[in-house]
Length: 190
Image (cartoon, rainbow, N blue to C red; front, side):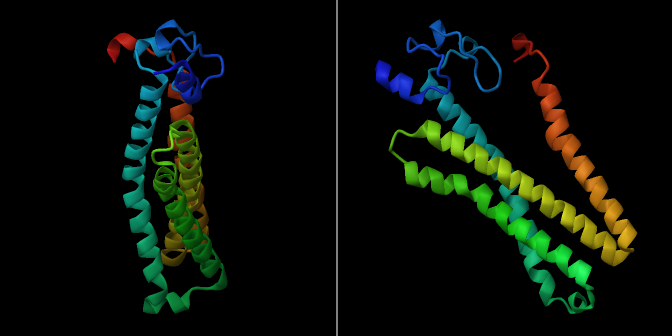
């Protein structure tokens, strides 16, 4: 790999072009790049593969949720929803459809950038799309919880379900990962 190729795929402007063995750069996961002994291109390929695997897990769920929500207006009981429930439903279905689109965007990014040697751009854009998709999915999940508890029990239960869902998502999707991210890693365990 030429010096120019290594520089063009580097995530870190401070990384030397001599490769990861001679670099002081830190990988996206906070580890010294020398631990993995991978080139910047190999790291990008690994990051891309990791991202695609994560999206495979979440895409099935969001597609199932969206499909379920799309069938609700065709149910007989749907006509009994009040205007607040209709607003919750419409917000939820919009968030679910948007989450589906954002979480599938990395596939179109890959197609558009395929064989153009723009893996760094593909990984960065796909990462942003995945984060937005997860945010929209959290809105959709919250809306589903609110709507179900509102219709089945009452409005107060719907609000409580929404608050609990937001709290649970915030803790499990944000607080816990950031807490783990901040801890020092013992690489001998890996």
